[in-house]
Amino acid sequence: MRCLYHMPLSPASRKVRLVLGEKRLAYELRVENAWESGDSFLAINPSGETPALVDEEGVVVCDDVAICEYLDERYPDPPLLGSTPAERAEARRLVAWFDRLFFGEVTQNLAGEKIFKRLAGTGAPDSARVRLGITSIRRHLDYIDYLVDRRNWLAGDSLSMADIAAAAQLSTIDYAGDVPWEPHPGAHDWYARIKSRPSFRPLLQDRLAGLPPAKHYADLDF
Amino acid sequence: MRCLYHMPLSPASRKVRLVLGEKRLAYELRVENAWESGDSFLAINPSGETPALVDEEGVVVCDDVAICEYLDERYPDPPLLGSTPAERAEARRLVAWFDRLFFGEVTQNLAGEKIFKRLAGTGAPDSARVRLGITSIRRHLDYIDYLVDRRNWLAGDSLSMADIAAAAQLSTIDYAGDVPWEPHPGAHDWYARIKSRPSFRPLLQDRLAGLPPAKHYADLDF
Image (cartoon, rainbow over all chains, first blue to last red):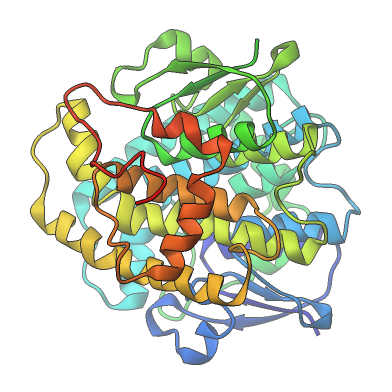
Protein backbone atom coordinates (compact mmCIF):
# COMPACT_ATOMS: atom_id res chain seq x y z
CA MET A 1 0.00 0.00 0.00
CA ARG A 2 1.21 3.49 -0.93
CA CYS A 3 2.36 5.31 2.22
CA LEU A 4 2.87 9.01 2.97
CA TYR A 5 4.99 10.07 5.92
CA HIS A 6 3.65 13.44 7.02
CA MET A 7 3.13 16.05 9.73
CA PRO A 8 -0.64 16.74 10.00
CA LEU A 9 -0.57 20.55 9.88
CA SER A 10 2.53 20.99 7.73
CA PRO A 11 1.59 22.73 4.46
CA ALA A 12 4.17 20.72 2.51
CA SER A 13 2.52 17.48 3.63
CA ARG A 14 -0.98 18.87 3.04
CA LYS A 15 -0.05 19.84 -0.50
CA VAL A 16 0.86 16.23 -1.26
CA ARG A 17 -2.33 14.91 0.41
CA LEU A 18 -4.40 17.25 -1.80
CA VAL A 19 -2.59 16.07 -4.93
CA LEU A 20 -3.13 12.42 -3.96
CA GLY A 21 -6.80 13.24 -3.33
CA GLU A 22 -7.30 15.06 -6.65
CA LYS A 23 -5.79 12.07 -8.43
CA ARG A 24 -7.97 9.68 -6.39
CA LEU A 25 -4.97 7.64 -5.24
CA ALA A 26 -5.40 5.52 -2.11
CA TYR A 27 -2.69 5.75 0.55
CA GLU A 28 -2.04 5.29 4.21
CA LEU A 29 -0.66 8.05 6.39
CA ARG A 30 2.11 7.77 8.98
CA VAL A 31 2.88 10.68 11.27
CA GLU A 32 6.56 11.63 11.41
CA ASN A 33 7.14 14.70 13.52
CA ALA A 34 10.31 16.65 12.72
CA TRP A 35 11.25 17.10 16.38
CA GLU A 36 11.21 13.38 17.22
CA SER A 37 12.22 11.78 13.95
CA GLY A 38 14.36 8.65 14.30
CA ASP A 39 16.92 6.66 12.36
CA SER A 40 14.34 4.47 10.65
CA PHE A 41 12.89 7.54 8.92
CA LEU A 42 16.37 8.79 7.96
CA ALA A 43 16.75 5.57 5.97
CA ILE A 44 13.74 6.72 3.92
CA ASN A 45 14.68 10.40 3.68
CA PRO A 46 18.30 11.28 4.54
CA SER A 47 17.24 14.90 5.11
CA GLY A 48 14.84 13.78 7.87
CA GLU A 49 12.06 15.92 6.40
CA THR A 50 8.44 15.19 5.68
CA PRO A 51 6.65 14.62 3.41
CA ALA A 52 8.13 11.40 2.03
CA LEU A 53 6.19 9.03 -0.17
CA VAL A 54 6.71 5.30 -0.57
CA ASP A 55 4.78 4.54 -3.72
CA GLU A 56 3.65 1.20 -5.09
CA GLU A 57 6.60 -1.00 -6.13
CA GLY A 58 8.53 0.61 -3.26
CA VAL A 59 9.59 3.75 -5.15
CA VAL A 60 10.69 6.29 -2.50
CA VAL A 61 10.13 9.97 -3.32
CA CYS A 62 11.22 12.74 -0.95
CA ASP A 63 10.63 16.50 -0.94
CA ASP A 64 7.18 17.94 -1.49
CA VAL A 65 7.93 19.50 -4.87
CA ALA A 66 9.59 16.32 -6.14
CA ILE A 67 6.62 14.24 -4.89
CA CYS A 68 4.06 16.50 -6.62
CA GLU A 69 6.00 16.42 -9.90
CA TYR A 70 6.40 12.64 -9.61
CA LEU A 71 2.68 12.12 -8.99
CA ASP A 72 1.75 14.32 -11.94
CA GLU A 73 4.09 12.37 -14.23
CA ARG A 74 3.22 8.90 -12.95
CA TYR A 75 -0.56 9.49 -12.60
CA PRO A 76 -1.37 12.18 -15.17
CA ASP A 77 -5.16 12.14 -14.69
CA PRO A 78 -6.19 14.84 -13.93
CA PRO A 79 -3.18 16.93 -15.00
CA LEU A 80 -2.35 19.51 -12.31
CA LEU A 81 0.26 21.65 -14.04
CA GLY A 82 -1.32 22.68 -17.34
CA SER A 83 -0.45 21.56 -20.85
CA THR A 84 2.04 23.98 -22.47
CA PRO A 85 5.50 24.82 -21.06
CA ALA A 86 4.33 28.42 -20.48
CA GLU A 87 1.19 27.33 -18.58
CA ARG A 88 3.24 24.92 -16.51
CA ALA A 89 5.79 27.65 -15.78
CA GLU A 90 3.03 29.90 -14.47
CA ALA A 91 1.67 27.15 -12.21
CA ARG A 92 5.17 26.42 -10.89
CA ARG A 93 5.91 30.13 -10.33
CA LEU A 94 2.86 30.34 -8.09
CA VAL A 95 3.69 27.07 -6.34
CA ALA A 96 7.07 28.56 -5.43
CA TRP A 97 5.37 31.82 -4.37
CA PHE A 98 3.26 30.00 -1.80
CA ASP A 99 5.79 27.30 -0.83
CA ARG A 100 8.54 29.79 -0.22
CA LEU A 101 7.31 33.38 0.12
CA PHE A 102 3.98 32.76 1.83
CA PHE A 103 5.56 30.05 4.00
CA GLY A 104 8.45 32.29 5.05
CA GLU A 105 6.45 35.48 5.57
CA VAL A 106 3.19 34.08 6.94
CA THR A 107 3.19 30.39 7.89
CA GLN A 108 6.45 30.40 9.83
CA ASN A 109 5.42 33.54 11.70
CA LEU A 110 1.87 32.46 12.52
CA ALA A 111 1.62 28.65 12.57
CA GLY A 112 5.35 28.34 13.30
CA GLU A 113 5.08 30.48 16.42
CA LYS A 114 1.60 29.52 17.61
CA ILE A 115 1.33 25.85 16.67
CA PHE A 116 4.63 24.18 15.78
CA LYS A 117 6.59 25.70 18.67
CA ARG A 118 3.93 24.39 21.04
CA LEU A 119 3.91 20.92 19.51
CA ALA A 120 7.70 20.75 19.63
CA GLY A 121 7.82 22.20 23.16
CA THR A 122 10.26 24.91 22.14
CA GLY A 123 8.74 27.87 23.95
CA ALA A 124 6.13 30.59 23.76
CA PRO A 125 5.22 32.44 20.55
CA ASP A 126 7.40 35.46 19.69
CA SER A 127 4.79 38.22 19.51
CA ALA A 128 6.84 40.36 17.12
CA ARG A 129 6.91 37.49 14.63
CA VAL A 130 3.19 36.86 15.07
CA ARG A 131 2.49 40.53 14.32
CA LEU A 132 4.69 40.32 11.23
CA GLY A 133 2.70 37.30 10.05
CA ILE A 134 -0.59 39.13 10.58
CA THR A 135 0.66 42.04 8.47
CA SER A 136 2.20 39.88 5.76
CA ILE A 137 -0.83 37.70 5.08
CA ARG A 138 -2.76 40.72 3.73
CA ARG A 139 -0.41 41.17 0.79
CA HIS A 140 -0.81 37.53 -0.18
CA LEU A 141 -4.61 37.64 0.10
CA ASP A 142 -4.54 40.80 -2.03
CA TYR A 143 -2.55 38.88 -4.61
CA ILE A 144 -5.06 36.00 -4.60
CA ASP A 145 -7.88 38.56 -4.99
CA TYR A 146 -5.97 40.03 -7.96
CA LEU A 147 -5.43 36.64 -9.62
CA VAL A 148 -8.99 35.31 -9.24
CA ASP A 149 -10.34 38.60 -10.51
CA ARG A 150 -8.63 37.73 -13.80
CA ARG A 151 -8.67 33.95 -13.89
CA ASN A 152 -10.93 31.07 -12.93
CA TRP A 153 -8.22 29.45 -10.80
CA LEU A 154 -4.91 30.94 -9.64
CA ALA A 155 -2.80 29.87 -12.61
CA GLY A 156 -5.47 29.78 -15.33
CA ASP A 157 -8.69 28.07 -16.40
CA SER A 158 -8.24 24.85 -14.44
CA LEU A 159 -7.41 23.89 -10.89
CA SER A 160 -3.64 23.38 -10.65
CA MET A 161 -0.77 22.80 -8.25
CA ALA A 162 -0.82 26.58 -7.70
CA ASP A 163 -4.27 26.42 -6.06
CA ILE A 164 -3.20 23.36 -4.10
CA ALA A 165 -0.01 25.00 -2.83
CA ALA A 166 -1.86 28.15 -1.81
CA ALA A 167 -4.71 26.28 -0.15
CA ALA A 168 -2.30 24.03 1.74
CA GLN A 169 -0.63 27.07 3.34
CA LEU A 170 -3.92 28.85 4.03
CA SER A 171 -5.53 25.75 5.55
CA THR A 172 -2.76 25.60 8.14
CA ILE A 173 -3.25 29.27 9.04
CA ASP A 174 -7.03 28.83 9.01
CA TYR A 175 -6.77 26.02 11.60
CA ALA A 176 -5.89 28.69 14.16
CA GLY A 177 -8.45 31.11 12.68
CA ASP A 178 -5.79 33.58 11.54
CA VAL A 179 -6.95 34.24 7.96
CA PRO A 180 -8.78 37.61 7.66
CA TRP A 181 -11.26 36.41 5.04
CA GLU A 182 -13.71 39.25 5.35
CA PRO A 183 -11.79 42.04 3.57
CA HIS A 184 -10.80 39.57 0.81
CA PRO A 185 -14.00 38.34 -0.90
CA GLY A 186 -12.18 37.06 -4.01
CA ALA A 187 -9.77 34.96 -1.97
CA HIS A 188 -12.66 33.82 0.25
CA ASP A 189 -14.77 32.59 -2.68
CA TRP A 190 -11.79 30.87 -4.27
CA TYR A 191 -10.95 29.14 -0.96
CA ALA A 192 -14.61 28.12 -0.47
CA ARG A 193 -14.47 26.43 -3.89
CA ILE A 194 -11.33 24.44 -3.16
CA LYS A 195 -12.33 23.71 0.44
CA SER A 196 -15.51 21.99 -0.76
CA ARG A 197 -13.67 19.52 -3.00
CA PRO A 198 -13.54 15.89 -1.86
CA SER A 199 -9.72 16.05 -1.79
CA PHE A 200 -9.96 18.60 1.04
CA ARG A 201 -12.09 16.50 3.42
CA PRO A 202 -9.26 14.58 5.11
CA LEU A 203 -7.49 17.87 5.94
CA LEU A 204 -10.61 19.26 7.58
CA GLN A 205 -10.73 16.21 9.84
CA ASP A 206 -7.23 16.80 11.29
CA ARG A 207 -7.28 17.54 15.01
CA LEU A 208 -4.26 18.22 17.20
CA ALA A 209 -4.46 17.04 20.82
CA GLY A 210 -4.91 20.04 23.13
CA LEU A 211 -5.10 22.42 20.18
CA PRO A 212 -8.62 22.44 18.74
CA PRO A 213 -9.17 24.28 15.42
CA ALA A 214 -11.02 27.57 15.03
CA LYS A 215 -14.80 27.14 15.02
CA HIS A 216 -15.22 27.67 11.27
CA TYR A 217 -12.21 25.53 10.29
CA ALA A 218 -14.16 22.55 8.92
CA ASP A 219 -17.23 24.60 7.96
CA LEU A 220 -17.76 24.79 4.19
CA ASP A 221 -19.96 27.84 4.65
CA PHE A 222 -17.49 30.02 6.59
CA MET B 1 16.96 37.93 -27.74
CA ARG B 2 16.37 35.70 -24.73
CA CYS B 3 17.18 37.65 -21.54
CA LEU B 4 18.00 36.50 -18.01
CA TYR B 5 17.67 38.93 -15.11
CA HIS B 6 20.14 37.77 -12.49
CA MET B 7 22.40 38.51 -9.54
CA PRO B 8 25.95 37.46 -10.47
CA LEU B 9 26.81 35.42 -7.37
CA SER B 10 23.32 34.20 -6.51
CA PRO B 11 23.20 30.38 -6.72
CA ALA B 12 19.61 30.46 -8.02
CA SER B 13 20.71 32.62 -10.96
CA ARG B 14 23.86 30.54 -11.52
CA LYS B 15 21.79 27.37 -11.68
CA VAL B 16 19.76 28.82 -14.55
CA ARG B 17 22.91 30.06 -16.34
CA LEU B 18 24.37 26.54 -16.14
CA VAL B 19 21.16 25.02 -17.54
CA LEU B 20 21.14 27.55 -20.40
CA GLY B 21 24.80 26.72 -21.03
CA GLU B 22 24.29 22.95 -21.03
CA LYS B 23 21.45 23.38 -23.51
CA ARG B 24 23.62 25.74 -25.63
CA LEU B 25 20.98 28.48 -25.60
CA ALA B 26 22.14 32.03 -26.31
CA TYR B 27 20.96 34.77 -23.95
CA GLU B 28 21.85 38.19 -22.67
CA LEU B 29 22.27 38.93 -18.98
CA ARG B 30 20.88 41.88 -17.04
CA VAL B 31 21.93 42.48 -13.46
CA GLU B 32 19.02 43.02 -11.08
CA ASN B 33 20.19 43.32 -7.49
CA ALA B 34 17.57 42.44 -4.86
CA TRP B 35 18.41 45.45 -2.69
CA GLU B 36 17.88 48.04 -5.42
CA SER B 37 15.19 46.44 -7.56
CA GLY B 38 12.71 48.85 -9.08
CA ASP B 39 9.16 48.91 -10.37
CA SER B 40 10.12 47.99 -13.92
CA PHE B 41 11.43 44.66 -12.69
CA LEU B 42 8.31 44.10 -10.55
CA ALA B 43 6.33 44.20 -13.79
CA ILE B 44 8.37 41.18 -14.92
CA ASN B 45 8.38 39.33 -11.60
CA PRO B 46 5.81 40.50 -9.01
CA SER B 47 7.88 38.84 -6.27
CA GLY B 48 10.85 41.08 -7.14
CA GLU B 49 13.19 38.09 -7.13
CA THR B 50 15.87 36.94 -9.53
CA PRO B 51 16.30 34.94 -11.64
CA ALA B 52 13.62 35.82 -14.17
CA LEU B 53 13.77 34.75 -17.78
CA VAL B 54 12.22 36.44 -20.77
CA ASP B 55 12.35 33.77 -23.43
CA GLU B 56 11.92 34.07 -27.17
CA GLU B 57 8.37 35.07 -28.13
CA GLY B 58 8.29 37.10 -24.88
CA VAL B 59 7.37 34.21 -22.57
CA VAL B 60 8.18 35.36 -19.02
CA VAL B 61 9.25 32.67 -16.55
CA CYS B 62 10.00 33.46 -12.90
CA ASP B 63 11.48 31.42 -10.06
CA ASP B 64 14.62 29.35 -10.55
CA VAL B 65 12.91 25.96 -10.24
CA ALA B 66 10.13 26.96 -12.64
CA ILE B 67 12.71 28.30 -15.11
CA CYS B 68 14.78 25.09 -15.01
CA GLU B 69 11.69 22.91 -15.52
CA TYR B 70 10.51 25.19 -18.34
CA LEU B 71 13.87 25.04 -20.10
CA ASP B 72 13.99 21.26 -19.80
CA GLU B 73 10.48 20.94 -21.30
CA ARG B 74 10.91 23.56 -24.01
CA TYR B 75 14.49 22.61 -24.99
CA PRO B 76 14.78 18.92 -24.11
CA ASP B 77 18.26 18.37 -25.57
CA PRO B 78 20.17 17.35 -23.50
CA PRO B 79 17.63 16.17 -20.92
CA LEU B 80 18.71 17.25 -17.44
CA LEU B 81 16.24 15.39 -15.23
CA GLY B 82 16.48 11.75 -16.31
CA SER B 83 13.95 9.66 -18.20
CA THR B 84 11.72 7.71 -15.76
CA PRO B 85 9.51 9.32 -13.08
CA ALA B 86 11.66 7.67 -10.39
CA GLU B 87 14.94 8.98 -11.90
CA ARG B 88 13.43 12.44 -12.22
CA ALA B 89 12.20 12.29 -8.62
CA GLU B 90 15.73 11.51 -7.43
CA ALA B 91 17.18 14.43 -9.41
CA ARG B 92 14.50 16.78 -8.02
CA ARG B 93 15.03 15.52 -4.46
CA LEU B 94 18.69 16.50 -4.71
CA VAL B 95 17.90 19.82 -6.39
CA ALA B 96 15.71 20.64 -3.37
CA TRP B 97 18.46 19.43 -1.02
CA PHE B 98 20.93 21.95 -2.42
CA ASP B 99 18.45 24.75 -3.21
CA ARG B 100 16.93 24.66 0.25
CA LEU B 101 19.07 22.80 2.81
CA PHE B 102 22.53 23.71 1.53
CA PHE B 103 21.39 27.26 0.81
CA GLY B 104 19.88 27.69 4.28
CA GLU B 105 22.66 26.00 6.24
CA VAL B 106 25.70 27.02 4.24
CA THR B 107 25.17 29.69 1.57
CA GLN B 108 23.16 32.09 3.70
CA ASN B 109 25.64 31.76 6.57
CA LEU B 110 28.80 32.10 4.48
CA ALA B 111 28.08 34.03 1.26
CA GLY B 112 25.06 35.70 2.87
CA GLU B 113 27.16 37.11 5.70
CA LYS B 114 30.46 37.70 3.90
CA ILE B 115 29.36 38.75 0.40
CA PHE B 116 25.68 39.70 0.10
CA LYS B 117 25.58 41.79 3.29
CA ARG B 118 28.57 43.73 2.00
CA LEU B 119 27.08 44.25 -1.45
CA ALA B 120 23.76 45.38 0.05
CA GLY B 121 25.52 47.57 2.63
CA THR B 122 23.64 45.95 5.51
CA GLY B 123 26.44 45.52 8.01
CA ALA B 124 29.34 43.35 9.06
CA PRO B 125 29.27 39.54 8.97
CA ASP B 126 27.76 37.84 12.03
CA SER B 127 30.66 35.63 13.13
CA ALA B 128 28.40 33.06 14.83
CA ARG B 129 26.58 32.49 11.56
CA VAL B 130 29.85 32.28 9.63
CA ARG B 131 31.07 29.59 12.07
CA LEU B 132 27.80 27.71 11.64
CA GLY B 133 28.24 27.79 7.86
CA ILE B 134 31.82 26.49 8.17
CA THR B 135 30.59 23.57 10.29
CA SER B 136 27.55 22.83 8.13
CA ILE B 137 29.35 22.63 4.80
CA ARG B 138 31.22 19.49 5.94
CA ARG B 139 28.03 17.43 6.19
CA HIS B 140 27.06 18.40 2.66
CA LEU B 141 30.50 17.63 1.24
CA ASP B 142 30.34 14.27 3.06
CA TYR B 143 27.02 13.63 1.34
CA ILE B 144 28.50 14.48 -2.09
CA ASP B 145 31.44 12.14 -1.32
CA TYR B 146 28.89 9.44 -0.45
CA LEU B 147 26.86 9.94 -3.63
CA VAL B 148 29.77 10.03 -6.09
CA ASP B 149 31.26 6.96 -4.45
CA ARG B 150 28.14 5.11 -5.69
CA ARG B 151 27.18 6.99 -8.86
CA ASN B 152 28.84 8.68 -11.81
CA TRP B 153 26.96 11.94 -11.19
CA LEU B 154 24.95 12.96 -8.11
CA ALA B 155 21.58 11.59 -9.21
CA GLY B 156 22.73 8.73 -11.46
CA ASP B 157 24.65 7.92 -14.64
CA SER B 158 24.26 11.30 -16.34
CA LEU B 159 24.81 14.91 -15.44
CA SER B 160 21.50 16.32 -14.16
CA MET B 161 19.88 19.32 -12.51
CA ALA B 162 21.11 17.81 -9.21
CA ASP B 163 24.76 18.38 -10.18
CA ILE B 164 23.90 21.82 -11.49
CA ALA B 165 22.06 22.84 -8.31
CA ALA B 166 24.91 21.59 -6.11
CA ALA B 167 27.63 23.19 -8.23
CA ALA B 168 25.75 26.51 -8.34
CA GLN B 169 25.74 26.69 -4.53
CA LEU B 170 29.35 25.52 -4.20
CA SER B 171 30.60 27.94 -6.86
CA THR B 172 29.27 30.85 -4.80
CA ILE B 173 30.98 29.58 -1.65
CA ASP B 174 34.15 28.85 -3.62
CA TYR B 175 34.31 32.46 -4.84
CA ALA B 176 35.31 33.42 -1.29
CA GLY B 177 37.53 30.33 -0.95
CA ASP B 178 35.35 28.79 1.77
CA VAL B 179 35.02 25.23 0.45
CA PRO B 180 37.33 22.81 2.33
CA TRP B 181 38.07 20.63 -0.71
CA GLU B 182 41.08 18.82 0.69
CA PRO B 183 39.33 16.42 3.14
CA HIS B 184 36.69 15.65 0.46
CA PRO B 185 38.44 14.06 -2.54
CA GLY B 186 35.21 12.64 -4.01
CA ALA B 187 33.44 16.00 -3.94
CA HIS B 188 36.63 17.67 -5.25
CA ASP B 189 36.89 15.37 -8.26
CA TRP B 190 33.19 15.69 -9.03
CA TYR B 191 33.44 19.50 -8.83
CA ALA B 192 36.56 19.50 -11.03
CA ARG B 193 34.56 17.60 -13.66
CA ILE B 194 31.64 19.99 -13.69
CA LYS B 195 33.84 23.08 -13.35
CA SER B 196 35.68 22.19 -16.56
CA ARG B 197 32.50 22.05 -18.66
CA PRO B 198 31.97 24.89 -21.17
CA SER B 199 28.69 25.82 -19.38
CA PHE B 200 30.74 26.78 -16.31
CA ARG B 201 33.07 29.26 -18.03
CA PRO B 202 30.84 32.35 -17.75
CA LEU B 203 30.50 31.80 -13.99
CA LEU B 204 34.25 31.65 -13.56
CA GLN B 205 34.55 35.05 -15.25
CA ASP B 206 32.25 36.81 -12.73
CA ARG B 207 34.06 39.47 -10.72
CA LEU B 208 32.54 41.69 -8.04
CA ALA B 209 33.93 45.22 -7.70
CA GLY B 210 36.07 45.45 -4.56
CA LEU B 211 35.57 41.77 -3.80
CA PRO B 212 38.04 39.69 -5.81
CA PRO B 213 37.58 35.89 -5.83
CA ALA B 214 39.84 33.41 -4.03
CA LYS B 215 43.01 32.69 -5.99
CA HIS B 216 41.93 29.22 -7.18
CA TYR B 217 38.35 30.27 -8.03
CA ALA B 218 38.73 30.17 -11.83
CA ASP B 219 41.51 27.57 -11.81
CA LEU B 220 40.43 24.25 -13.34
CA ASP B 221 43.30 22.52 -11.58
CA PHE B 222 42.53 23.64 -8.03
